[in-house]
Image (cartoon, rainbow, N blue to C red; front, side, top):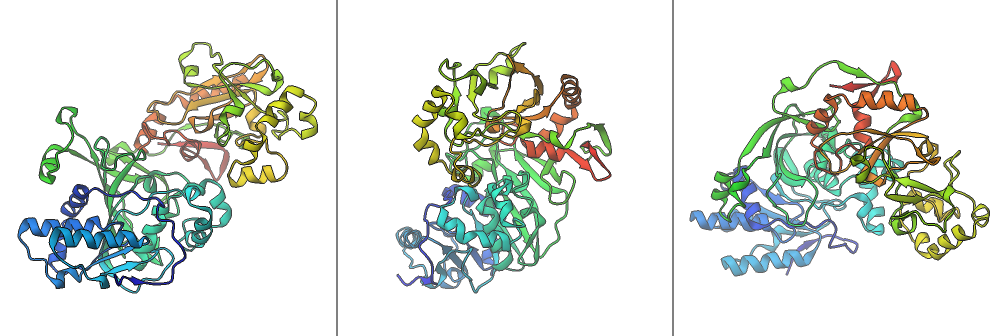
Length: 525
């Protein structure tokens, strides 16, 4: 097979692959009238084609409508794909289903991020790979990092090691193809993870709405809430229309699936689904600044102006996430308080039961071999003074030393292989205003003090907290956070039931510090 190629280092064929079912490729094409545009002469490209399901869908629609599939029409369908076997499978499927030899001149074996593609297209469509930067293979990560920087998705490499490490490669693919492959005033139609619009710090670089020095705009989004378009995918997803060389304007038309449970799952018929699914039209606007996460409202009147609440917080009271053991939970977390480890290194760990108890009592305990005054890990000579602690850590030494992560590796390389993430002086504050941050739809902050002198800790991304050094201050902040507009705003930010419900970055956005009153974050109603 003579597929057009350019020099390419060995690809990783499974990077973020999420294949689109044929019926949902047809749905996207029919929803946006892409087939009619093709008949009218539009040049169409799948820039991350996989096995070419969108091109196949176009051919299936043509056959159903009795429209001839001519060589000229085929010459206006182009596929770009990093895995040559997928392109070979596409040609086999076209031959089997339609008796046609799809022109090899329209198939390109390329990494669309790293390799230059000479053509431009009226319409781009498809489903870019879904994978966070942290999940990429290490060698590919190093090769692709400069492109994240070049596209303005992160300002510098340090940001890629912090919160922006959660940026999705789909954001990079979309910036590349919208900026380099789209004809002037062309359009792109893509399935995508909705974190591109609702993610906190990681995707603000995508939301500058610039690609290769060109503007682009998102004008319509569909979000699925009950229908499983992609089986096995837990992240929130939808599809969106992008317009090239267009200034981003708000509000964005935002359709959210709203279907009576009695209707059941859609049939394979696209028309059956269109009749049975109901889309509730809403509006999306940024929280405050243009690159902020979006909030979704029924009407713009829901967005209140001014500030309804001031909360005085010190710089040390920035919202934080719980302790992250980086894959070694069974080394550091215990269902029962172990008798063989010195109590001074064992701390109560918040669990879901903590919010159900009138007087919180620990159901789990976490081992932290740290100085509570400094928030720094103990030195080995200090650990050796406690035989049971030393033995417990040594029994897990090989596993602890094998853990991954840039910041954790830095600690391990310094000899602190028993370190965990999320520990600093703030972690040992005697009071915490803490809330469930993951997968919830209610915002319920509580105050946790100590248990026999040992302070409570949150569990990874499940919990977030504001450290406090007096009980009076903790109660003041808790009372302020119980304002009913806070959960309402969190729901507008599309986090209800999702992993980013009330994560620290989102709460920091809500409690945005005023430049003139740095110690008075103001709730943005």
